[in-house]
Amino acid sequence: MFFNSLNRKLKKSYGVVNPEIGRMVFPNGEAEYIYVGTILNTLFSKRDVFELLKVYVSVYTYYKSTMGNTAKTYTYAKKKASGMLLEGEVKKLIALVMFNLTASKAGISDPVDAVRQYRGFVDSYIETVEGIQKNAWRFKPDTVDAGTVNSPLLVDGVCGVRDYINALKIPGVEEITYKRNSSLHLTDENCRVSYAIDEYKLYNAKDSSEIATLWFNIYGTENTDVQPACFSDKTPFSADKVAPELFEAVTKEWKNIENIVQNAQIPYDQVKLVTSTFAYFYVIWTFSFKGIRGYQCDEIEKRYTDGFAEYVKQAFENAPYKAVLESEATLKDMLKRVDRRVRNSYHENNRTLIDDGLSREFILEFISDEAAGSRIVDAVSRRIFEEWIAVGADADQRYLT
Image 1 (tube, rainbow, N blue to C red):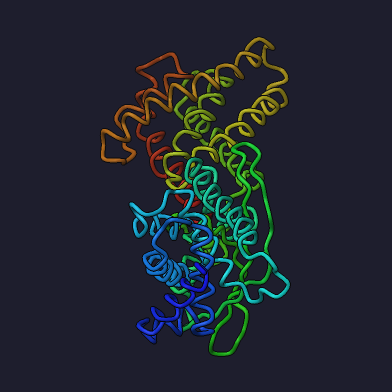
Image 2 (image 1 turned 180 degrees about the vertical axis):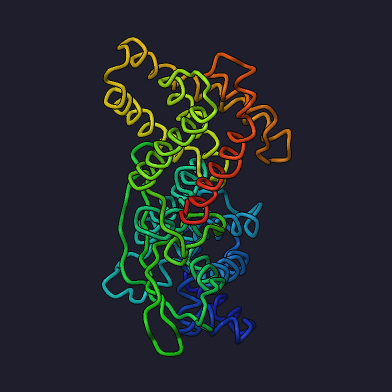
């Protein structure tokens, strides 16, 4: 009797449903409206089914407008159902929306049970978004390989993919079309977050030629502003490539400094000159390579100091063993000291490298006669603040970090 009564009331209420909304939310007409109302009544007993239908319509249309962004829909639905449904019930309502949007329900004998299964998908999606939010630094794309499978672009749902792609500015391309090509399921064991990343192929709409392949992580709450690495004209940063270049440059440079000292006929300690040049050159290089990141500096410094240890053993095999051995520890200590010194100067001078006594301090690392050292300050300063800076600035222009 009650079922027949509800059925009659649902039929009657369907007659006042806005036709446009009806076609959008209930494409199969009155039968589907009654079907949804009946399930809502079963899922949320003792609630006003007609008020629930209004919430259902709003949540359904919002979910579709966000192209299935469950986390955003959850936030929206909680507001729409405030005072009517508990948070867990809101998730159940979204599960019903997801279930009703499936292409085919053939073979499903118990829709209520199916909704319970979809509730698991709702929980999983929201937990993933929250887990990534809490560990945002782990999922932020690295500029050096942004958009690759190793560093997918973090965006706000499928709509975020669309908006990100549409915002790309590619020379010679007026309009971009795209297609999802594949997915890869991953788990970050450190923060225990499981998620999927999606591969998209981008095409030039004019001639259908392929532009690029980009990987996206759709579990963000906003779109990243990092640009795809494949669209940069710079070479992706690689410590394996950059470290040898840096080492070659400083090896030449200590010899240039030595020539200045020898031409001035000033006594000096060669091992200290080499050690000091390696330390000061590296610090100047890192500050003039403005785009280099902290972890990239760490990668380079490890290779740099290890390479130095081997280099001095070979280059100064006839020097006192104690001096050579001590130079390794001296380099590491000097790198820290000089970095602090230059960092303070750099920030005090509006993020600019200037010679505020640094050249003189460098010279006194390997020349004991301060008066004699003063004779070469200008020549050494030109090398440090012209040639050394130029090496770092060149790397900044060539490498994508």
